[in-house]
Length: 531
Ligand SMILES: [Fe+2]
Image (cartoon, rainbow, N blue to C red; front, side, top):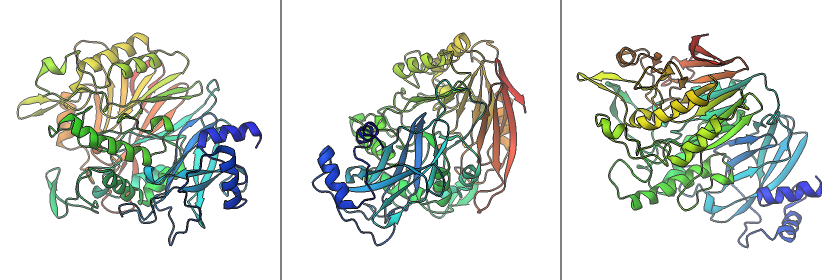
């Protein structure tokens, strides 16, 4: 590594690099001299009775020359404190050009701080575009699993094919993470996780009702409802001990965003659903944001500051696609009853906030990429159904923020090239739908692939009465099912294809995966076509 690269590393990872394998003492001395960055309370000779790598590895937010590598030290993942002493320590990392880790191209050491739950976020740079890299961490005599990541194509590079999975809503108590195992086995460029990575609730052991049927948890949350940083940390640790989830993280870089359950059900901006005073709820939200940052392969630009977390962001996949990852929780107006049409349609309310909306509109107006994919949380389709003689839709989705929805669809129609597709989740069902204006005959403007849950809702019944009811009252909805799974997306110059996968069961291990529906959008011609 030349001097320039070394300097760049010091700037990026806080610490580095050269001679990390020459022995801890010499590295420490060199680093202290070079950067003066090592804390005085550094744990210089860490020892662990068992592996601290119990919650896996991950990578995310790739660029053409790098990605974020992540792990978290947790020898006792289900204990508060995760079995770690409250001291910082150095964790070594290697990046290789081969899965056997023989051709190491970069290596270094990063600090795991107790303030951040001993999470490690390494921001790589200087790698080649559009190629896989393998990585692992080590501390004392312990090695992590080897993960694979992939850099983005250069911004102006032609790209023939992109393959990615859209998934989320992974209630730990409601099924095996079999879908993650299948995602791990797909050849993917990346995974988009739309949120509900954890659920905040206390365990509900014993028989309870699920979709009108008796249901018993497959496995139970540890602890009460999450309020404190320790609570959230332990909840993430419990989820992340799952080997299928670990396999999916280790298989490809992820772009993540949160929805509501990473904090609290249906939170909106500074408000929860219980009427807690905002200044009090924000204390909880800040702890949830910190735990989210600690547990996700996010860049330092997403580190929470003053209770705010910068999560909406873009990635460019050469000339083929821009991915716009949204945050529809932090800036949204409070939900209002869906029957209150004045409020639901009020231009004073927004689901994304003015700043993010302008940022999104600017991105969508860019003619450089062939496709634009909006990667977000909740349904943009207006799905309606009859309930007790009244037509209802959700107050928590874009249907509860109709002016935001109208503005976005108008913008897509005005500036788009028939090349905008949206991918989201939250509804615990697959929905495949065209998108039209709610208040006039706009024609088809865009299409939505809403991915069902990994587990939330347990096995599901398929195309049930709820599905038939929704299809009857949602003319642009093509198909809906409540089986579990994910959407596998394939994007080429000509088509944006959503391959909607389902599992026959998640309450037993080894569920069988099958294709449920496959639709294509043709470039320049909005609307789903059977594929
Ligand atoms: Fe969910």
